[in-house]
Image 1 (cartoon, rainbow, N blue to C red):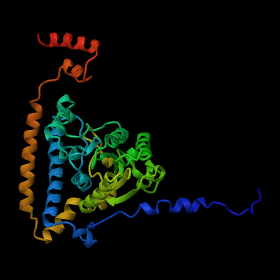
Image 2 (image 1 turned 135 degrees about the horizontal axis):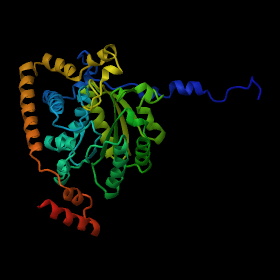
Image 3 (image 1 turned 90 degrees about the vertical axis):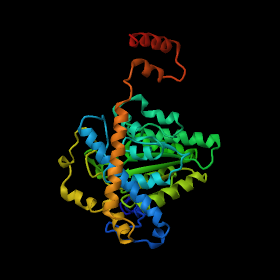
Image 4 (image 1 turned 180 degrees about the vertical axis):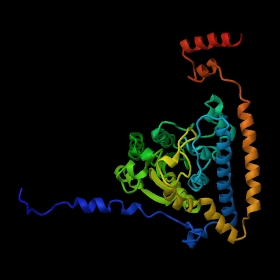
Length: 373
């Protein structure tokens, strides 16, 4: 080919612009507590604002008390949520009781808000089979998924079931982190739901880190929202440290999906203030205080607290009383979880199949006989 042949496709231009539609995060309140979109802010009543603040205070208190239990050796695995309160509670507030929730391991707060008890959340951490009693009580939620990204496939299947069953005003929710978007299950779930135009809302809580791996190393995509476009899924970014913006975007996404338009994807820009998990991860080994400070300055509770304080809707005494009340409730939940019966082999076998196979039925009888001695 001649060197002077005219370029047919400008791939460099495509690469430099393909993320443009997805990197304008929606925001209502900025990191200084200043209202930057008055029209959107005015959609919230004073009661709405206080309710959202209480939700975030509840989640932070849950995190603090649960970390205390973890340090005391009273729990198994726990993934801290410190810093992600606006992202998680904003989305949870937009959910409806009839929706199906497929959480990841960092999504206990949304699960509890959707109908599970704190006791059941603690039993999940302990690996106790009674952790999913909420399913028997009619809560439409799966147990938190440990396998990275698997919940996206599960949600896609549930969404197709919703569509085939003709359920109205019902959607399936799935959560993952930034690292989860590098998993094959992420693409398979999004593509499947899109192909069948199934009612699923996929949330990517981009907290900057997949354990010690930074977001920029996970993928060359400039945004994670743009990963929906290959499957024909509309997507957007939102300031995940702004609970007002997160709620509004989550509500719009749910409304769009529930109306029969197929799935949607939302990337919330948030941050994990602490460790990846309670299992010994040390963030100081892979990120600096200088890297963390801009995000701590965007603390979602401080942001909304400033607005409510200026409107004389909130004060520190009110917050302190709530924190005490919540932590007392969590302490009781832990006592209840610790009072759960010890697990037996027969219990595990009984929960393997709804109707036991002949071999399993025989094993149940065998172990029940041993356990009764």
